[in-house]
Length: 231
Image (cartoon, rainbow, N blue to C red; front, top):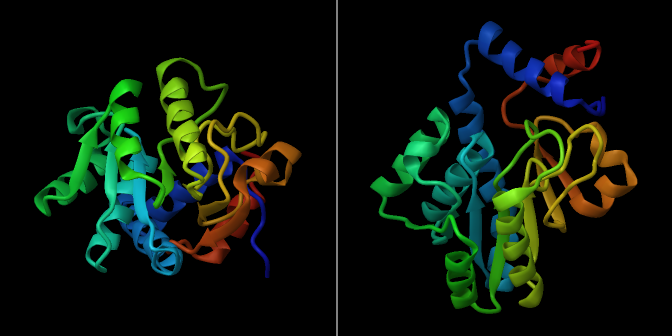
């Protein structure tokens, strides 16, 4: 049975069911997302000899990015983690993941301003691979202001170097229900648990590229149950 397309509200319902009925906290799903994301990336990193450059946000999408980076490290690939926000501004689960990365003395650059971002990204050179783990399904509306400018800056540098771009869950700024608003265009999207309704729009298809669903530990019956909810 193929997985249904879920709305933002239905994805929240999935998370709620997994925690309340299975007793699995969000940190478990985040760890699974990091592991499966790393395993999906490794063949490309190896075949193209690229260094992963992971943009990490302050919320749980950023936590997925930290987990992904750590899972790459323990498999022999050293990523460059570029943080939009410092540890004390992260969601609780994302902060757990960042502290684990810090304990391993991973390369984390705090770059809240575009100027620092330019310096760090440019130093990577032409063999980078951008991983967008800044904003996930929970984002709603139109992204503006400093975060939009930060992402645009990263996207422009990646495009200038012809880096591939992979998105975790969905491209940052995309409205999961509408498919519009993505700031960085991805060639590959590693979406979590189930595809989102916005992926089937014209804008969503253009922004996501090739979509792969990562089965992060959510049973299919829960996904199907959420899909039937009018939430």
